[in-house]
Amino acid sequence: MLLTRALQRNPEMIATAIDFHQRGIVPAATYFVDLDAIAHNAKLMADEAKKYGLRSYLMTKQNGRNPYITRVALEQGIDSTVAVEATEARTITRYGLPLGHVGHLSNIPLREIPSIVAMEPEVMTVFTYENAKAISDAATALGRVQNVYVRVNKPGDEFFKGMVGGWTEDECVEGVRKVVELPGVKVIGLTSFVNITYQTPAATKAKPTDTYFTMLRAKELLEKELGLEDLRVNAPAFNNCATFKMLAENGATDVEPGIGLLGSSLAHAYEDLAEKPAQVYVSEVMHHWEGEAYTLGGGLTYIEGSGGPQNEYPIRAITGRTFEEAKDNALTLVERGIIDYHGVLADGEKAKVGDTAIYALRAQFFVNRCYVAIVSGVSTGNPTLEGLFDSLGTALDADFNPLPVAQVIADIERVATELYGQDRNAASV
Image (cartoon, rainbow, N blue to C red; front, side):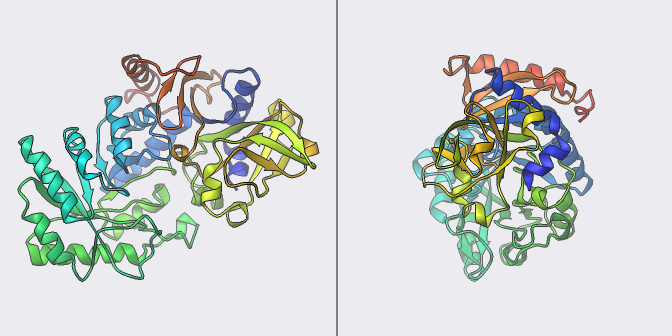
């Protein structure tokens, strides 16, 4: 499980998280991010992607669109960013960061397309002719041509309900033909999801899904029937250093690491992979009821959305006021209500009110209502809180009010270049 991995591979992060919470440096209900580990993981991923000729886009939803994480990852050689929806695109550009792939999981609403196209993203995904036409109209009005990816699926392929769209394999040629004819867009590739099966959690044994091979067949069809050349193959999901080689060997051109950068994917729970655990959720024991300890929620929403603890790996938290007190004091998360008010732990007598509770989860910061603390210097014994954010990427001051964007950008640049700059090695972790 991820907590065991974090205790084994990054105990300094956990010790610092407990210390910072107990001293009031970070509040409860905070994802604590070790920026040294982020730099380490990003450098490994960037180098591995380049080794196999893959273009790397950082998926920003898992990290709450956090500009420190994104900027440091870019500094280590990650090529660009992913905004799976319009709100992410706005946060990325707010902080002056490059906008790579937009609309990956949710196409941009028609009336919001002009503002997103004006941000000049590298590529946008379209699921419909209507979406493509709106992009074409917006791009034409700006005197430019917008690159787009299309998505092709086949009934019976592996995908998640609510996370699918595009054309079927049977209709893709005629459907995409209409997109190709639009003056303001250029079809440069395809994307799909999921491309590596989640049925086999071991990354070292990962194989492409039927969904992925449908995309490859569609690529050949579109190139043959529409005269398109060298279409790119964008292959997000389950992206980490252990899967890049396999994807490249199967024709992928793009990868989109996200939760792998945090060292917190399902694969990282099952195997000791190259990426180091880079985040934990910091909570606090609030009270007890009927023998159970109630820890503050706000950052535990995704557990419910992924089927509950019994369908994941056994989820536990460690509790205490120091690392030594907490490291062997594990309590098991039990079922609770639909709304994430508390994480409820069995064997509550092992925890005291005011204790820090540390969880290690398959994090999706952006679906929560919590904070994100960005901390540098963990690996060198000089931890510093660089910034506190909400879970959607808004920087906050000591009173939890939004900070001026210009100030945040300046702080991010200082940290990215002075602490993690390309002329230095990635942080030694």
